[in-house]
Amino acid sequence: MRIARWTAPTGAVAEGFVAEGFVIGDRVIPFPDGLTVADVLARGLDEAHRLFATVRDEGGAPLAGVRLLAPLVPAAIRDFVAFEEHVEGVSASVDGKSEVVPEWYQAPTFYFTNPHTVLGPGEAVRPPVTARLDFELEVAAVVGGAGGANLTAADAASAIFGYTIMNDWSARDLQSREMKVRLGPAKGKDFGTSLGPWIVTADELEPYLDDDGFLAVRAEVFVNDERIGHDLVSNMGWPFPELIAYASRNSRVVPGDVLGSGTTGNGGCLAELWGRRGELTPPPLTEGDTVRMVVEGIGELLGPVGAAVPAPELPAARVRSRARTRQERVAL
Image: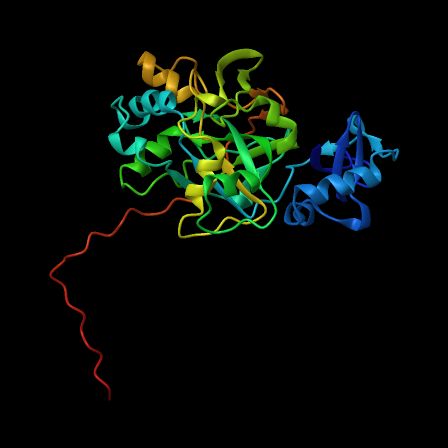
């Protein structure tokens, strides 16, 4: 099953009205009873199959006649760094030293990114002013059902409702400066994450799971139709259930949570190639470029690059004397 959200194309009478439902062949068919993707994720995969059976023979509308949106409004987005080859290559570009630190092997590290700047298929990213705009080719798991806390890997596998393609847009110059403060990326990644074109349910991708539970699907990324990178998603250091289990440690994952695999290796982003080659080849993305990601069993996600958006300037930190003391206000 494919789960999606869509609206009428620009200029159509129904423009702005968001429909949510199934993509069946070349048709889109809304969920019954006005249900939303969030509702269906909360009810879980078994209920999604029941709903599918009730509408599968309806006419719906032509897929070619609608504009797909991001397939869900995420409850939260965690982005992991689960590909060793990516870490090794990109560290040279961002941090100036090619390495995989021993701590990487100990646990699947992630950061939280912004669920309020999610972009849909074909929706242009509007980056900050940056000299090193980059893409990141990822597959993301979407949580459904009950979710939970302190899940085992087996429990976490049952919490995977489906998968989608994820492009974690990155301004590498901003990221490099920010991460020297040792708090992780902020404005270097805060401005846009593309998801889509739809959610493919987990049962559809079960044939691609290898004996160790890794999702062995091919992933490719193209810039202006030139293939930049390709990898097997099964080259992750941890399979998706273990990522979700780790995320739930002393915390909670809930329906609608999105968990990115992290960037694939072998050219899954430009920064990896810059780090390996010692030069900006291929060049950073610029306005007018188009990034196309293709993942076996899921589909294709298109991401155009729009114009950069300058932001108001802010002053640098005020240097304070550590010897200062607070003066008490004297009551009159």
